[in-house]
Image (cartoon, rainbow, N blue to C red; front, side, top):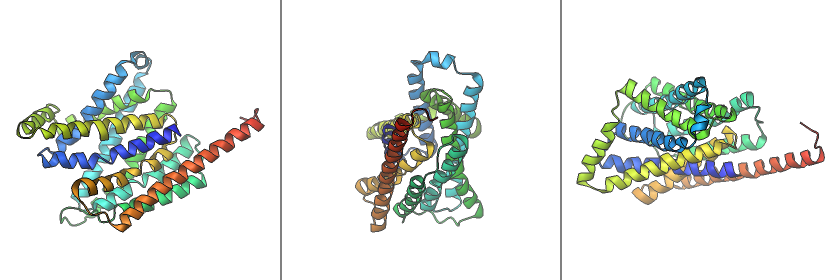
Length: 315
């Protein structure tokens, strides 16, 4: 249950990303600055946390450090590039976001193969309900421009759930291997920052220069930046790693689907965007799917414990 709670916290925290990024963009912050701010925040936070576990870091083989840095770095970079490619080639935002959640069945299948996690009827029903709910919640979310949809945009869109699934599986693999969850995120941050600098010639110092210039005009930009760093970055990823310590990747992904529900509600409250009936039904469907998953997981765990008590010599 603890893992499910942290999964929900992670998804809800990420649901604020669009709110804070929109507020910062309206203040004049560029997309590159927001992307870098997120990467640098994660790197600094988890580096500080990992600093207190230097003995764990010393015991980590170099090959694992390189594997985590490259594996999660590529996953993160690939997902971001595909998001950008999909939107710039005319794909509607609602469609892109819905397809992104198709990582759930991919993660479920890979977890069954690699980690021997069972594919239960409860998980399958919760997955179908989650995808239906997310699709309804994102109704009315369209591209903000008039770019014609190009075939390459569809290709980019279909690659997004693959990169998301790759991230979940690699993350869980190293946690199951005994690697520290916070250390994993630190190396992921290193990979993301190096990729941004090498591929996009990003300048981390630009973040602070741009924020300082904008703060001179309106101090509220610093409050928005603080909220951006704290909620959809630190809280989201810290809760994510806590969840991955105990729950299966597929369970995490289903619970994480509260993200668009939170985003839709906050968009209505903060920006006055329309919240239609179909979106409300979609949000309720996602929440019911999560509740159903929690119920079936608790029942399955209870049955396992009962079976083990009756047959203490079984595997």
